[in-house]
Length: 401
Image 1 (tube, rainbow, N blue to C red):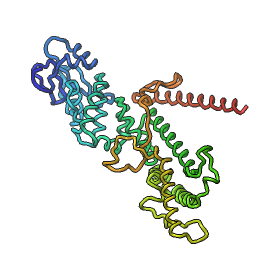
Image 2 (cartoon, helix red, strand yellow; image 1 turned 135 degrees about the horizontal axis):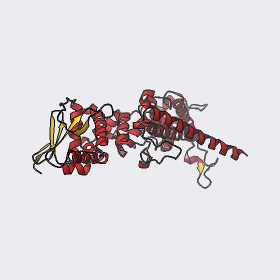
Image 3 (cartoon, rainbow, N blue to C red; image 1 turned 90 degrees about the vertical axis):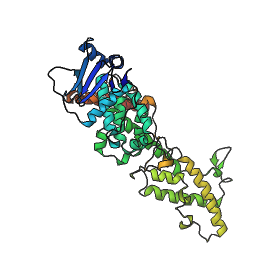
């Protein structure tokens, strides 16, 4: 292979992107792109093959490659379009993509452009492989960027079917649920929004279950190991009862304040406080609580209650351990905790492009819907949901009978 990208002296295909001229190899292009193979065959094998980028309406926002005609004038393209096509041609030669050619804030827009061109050239799988290498080159900053704009990233991930970026973005969307406006959610594809809502509702059910356990919890020292029941022989520690009362006083104060599920952080600060020790955290002072006993407590009793409260706090912390776990790739140890929970997860096969639809559901690609098709999809979807609800109601009636 003589020369270097993008001007190979032995290249037999010339591609014009405005003023940018590429001399590439027909065999390499045709082996990785069915669309380019077709264009090369159309241009003919004799002589030099010359392709060019032309405007082609809204369907091809980044232009369309065609066989060059004699009367076509050169078109001026934006820097972003030049950068997208240069990166796309780089994928044929295993070169690392420069996703930040237009700046860090434009990476998702650039990836969207690459996906648009990859679909035109029928080489999406090769693009995903090249993107993985480019993402690895960005390093840890990538996870900061995803956390900052997860909706844009999940849209890109769905477009190119990139599993781990899709899962990473979903964690941040669901975790920061209370902060999103309706306009943000409307920018998601229907299948992505449905999945996000499903995971969100699952997380809310987990929180409700944990909340019930928190308010009904008794320490293990009160329980008979043989029967696993609270018995007077084991629950005769007065100091522990006072500690339970103090903890529940703190717990209910937190849950009825503005630090629970309705808070913008969806309860993250509350559950993290429980995990960090509840009223025994360094910024809390147990002495500020009124001890619920009708007589002055000796210093020895106060110290014993504090020890019981510390023991109790450790047991409570175990109840919220899974909620405060960080399942994202964002390094909280280096960059600090995010103001929301990052505990939710999905399996790879939960991604929309892996899910097998029921026969009664539409299998159309929503990204290509026009108004008529979208209306048809919504009618089919409503009919399907009505069928599900009807079946569920029938089953409930049979159970009652």
